Length: 394
Length: 183
Image 1 (cartoon, each protein chain N blue to C red):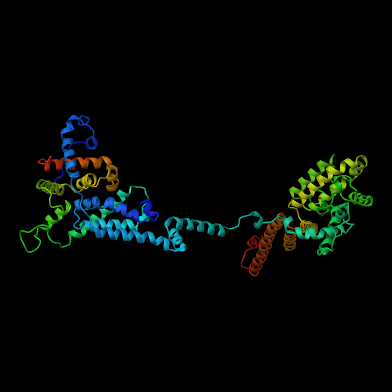
Image 2: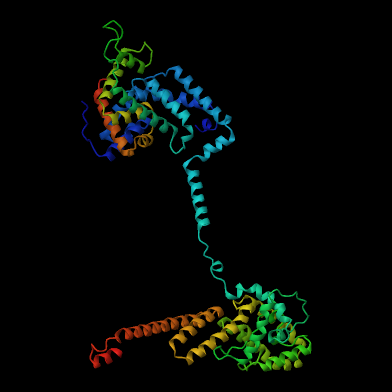
């Protein structure tokens, strides 16, 4: 039975003893060993020397030949393996496999990620109908009666192809005239023709446009409702226009048109004073303003053309609604108003009309219920006291 | 080992010649009944799994780890195997050498001219080693017979180096007591 020897000291002490023994074994002097260990260390060194003199056991030669032939075969194999097999062996390891799987998982996650870009979810109103707007620009430019076209003071006449959207262009002239009437429900912002700034707008100073066109523009400008007081300088005019466009006023296309047209009087005066030095910076500003207008999410001409018409219908319906108290008639008017508001894109009015419609329908249904109840209670007047009948009627 | 991994088969011959005999001595001290098989299996595993050697430890540590595991597996197998007794005489002659004597003689080489003192020393030494606890015997044989450093032994046995040195001291003390007549 093997007995465990008793502990003769701490492990640290044992380690120090063995270190001394190793040093002595390696050739250190006996005096380097601590005195208390010297005898023991000397005995151990003698045992070591005796064991070192013992020959090592021999291994069978067959084992050597087996090992060496196996090694030769193992070193030959990689060279005989094709490159594809070797690469496959290299790749079929946990590390590369994990890396490939991680990359694949990331790729799948990116591919199935829902597209959250704002451009795809909702488009500004102006951008949606930008094509019809652009298509209608030539059409509008061919209508000198329209104030928008009149304001399009181009240096060079533009040969435009016949607009495919020429039909929608007709109501544009009518809304232009309606702008002169100034519906009360619309904000007081002056009309602005977006398409006219495809050319150099007249508000940006004198250009080389022919005089008759300017005269026509001036006359049309006079027909328009008086806008806010014209700014003293042209930059303020542009700034005001931009602010109004950003605010998203109704019929912004027409609202802005009146302002530059209203400034024609001042511009005509300015052009007489300094024509040459005014054109270049103003042309640059016109270019910038045009680009800004194109980038701004404003209603296209077609939508703007339809908006005035729908707005008129909306205001008319509102006016009639205010005049009538008949619930049934109010329900009918409110239904029409909801449709017109949706058509014109006036979400606020549509929502309000929807709420009013709901309330009106409730009133109508309540009235009908009362009528039915009264009819049901009417055949039994003899069973009730006169006072109770009156109370029920109430 | 690097040369072998690079494709030089002759490097394995160098490794074998350097480590085969100490490895067999270690296997014999661990009680393996067929130490040649342990040496063969250990080197075959080195040949087969050479690519798995990352160089994080010494080759010798790796080799002896393989041999140590093989010895443990062999001892477990042989524990339940009905093998011939080491004390039983071989052959028909009852006075003939026993299997244990033949094994012991293999340990000290096949040189028959060894003097009696050495033989006796060997016999007493083997008996004293047999009596040592397994962990002390392992440490002593790895250090004194196979020549591994205490750091390598600690790495191999998964122990603290001070623990290894402590076991070494106990083993030396026990052997000194057993071999007092020879020192």
